[in-house]
Length: 456
Image (cartoon, rainbow, N blue to C red; front, side, top):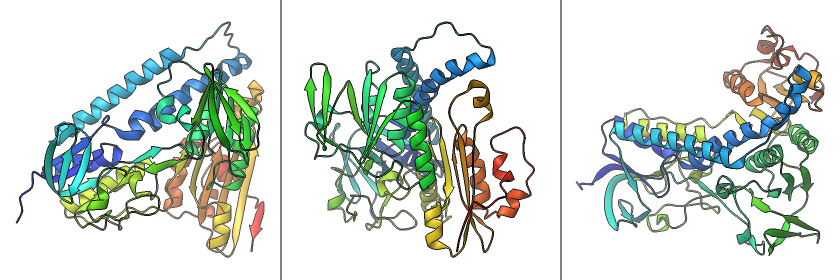
């Protein structure tokens, strides 16, 4: 029986990889993780965590204005980008240190290197020119942002990776994309004072979300000053002094300080040797895995965004934990990818769980829709033109709540709690039987009684 240096070598120290490696080490396995950049991965280092810190910063611009209606006099305020970024970097460094500390405490080893598979059991570390072997290899390399090759001068654009490290806040910025990251950064930039344009090639932003949520968010972005251009795309970018001239496919042009592409992420599988190890990938180069995250090579597994199943950090963590439980704790565990709550941390926020109206109508015979839109209590004093939108999708035959969709302040916090009910297959009658908590926005979720649309 062959002897290996490690029971497990994980390639990628993001959320999923760290959880799997730490648990494996906790269960007494010789475990190591290889990471070429920083421990923590996309979410902690250059994704959800720093992004939400910037979202918090951007919302203060509205808070200062709204405060006047509540008796606060703020005679002078100014924003300093360098202070924000320095404090953000300090917090990210703290979190990275915690990730490293937890791995070490569990007994796992960290290699700060670039890993390339030579065969299913052999990992070559490029920087140190060292080779290690493993009984099991876990691919947890996540995803990477990209800029379409069709854009002439695309190398002049930035992605979210670089946006977190800009030396100064751009006065004018164009964000290209219509998904989570694009919406969030459009809100960040405009909230911090930049003149912001959002460009999306599709008919509406936020593909995959409920259509009424998409429309609501579009209007909210416009109210906050974002110039939203749909059915539009960038053809070319060229330098013009210190700025960038962006030419659109329709011939119109924009002169901006920065242009940021946020057109999705691709599985980060290039250059790590998977092709030579019997690991099959799909057309997007995502690793194909079974319900236990095992690839077509029996000793190679993959978790997180690199598998392109549900690309959310908590899902990667669940998949990493399930992998470790299955292999190293004699507890075969799968991850249920249904009814996963998600949030877009724009301003306002979006929270969603379960089926959209259109998907529900396609899957079920009879659907009831409950919907409301109202001015939040805070806005009744401040006068701000904004609304909270809520929608509940119900299977009329069983009364089960199939989905819930919210746009507005604290939508993410509300949807996390609602997700428990949806996962438990709660009915609309269960919602109705719950006493409202007043005065809150969330109380509307248990007060909705009138069907605004029924499909049959």
